[in-house]
Image (tube, rainbow, N blue to C red; front, side):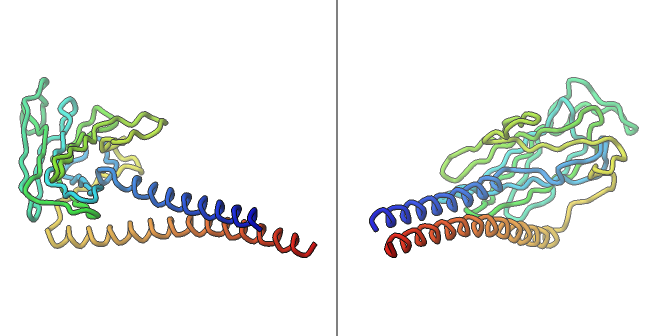
Length: 247
């Protein structure tokens, strides 16, 4: 009997640890700073990039977000959409190589967008919209290194490169893939403009609900599978125990 109880306790412990691990993994997977959409056509014009910043701390709010734009392949015509409670500042940098366009030669471009004054509470996220006039045509992707500062002074550096076909780093930088013009998987041949505050809030709520529902269903399925295996293990152990008593 003592051996049976020990086996049941071990099975229960393994089940609890497995479920906890699945929930933790789901939380980590959704905690990265990301850019949306994740792809645009090369040279796309008049579009919007949305930087989604989640708060992954339990006892501190996010109070500052710095998004660094590449200047070796500059994003032209950057404009920031007003964000309730936040103040945005765009920093321009002189380009090493001026860019010739139909409207003239461009000698400087945005290198950083900093959002301050607001806060993202624990368990919440914020979408920051940045409009652009034109994306570069001479690269396959853009990396937007980002710094996230919390109210307790902690700074999370989302600056690590993700190797092709390799394991994702702990703090990956948001990456926008640039596809060939007219490619079906490209996101950005159509034009777009920043949404209104109400529209942005509505989209945020919808996206949050959809993400939460999908993530919840996925986690529930995994947990159900683990619990099913545990129940089967209990049944086998009990069956063996009953057989032993019958003998």
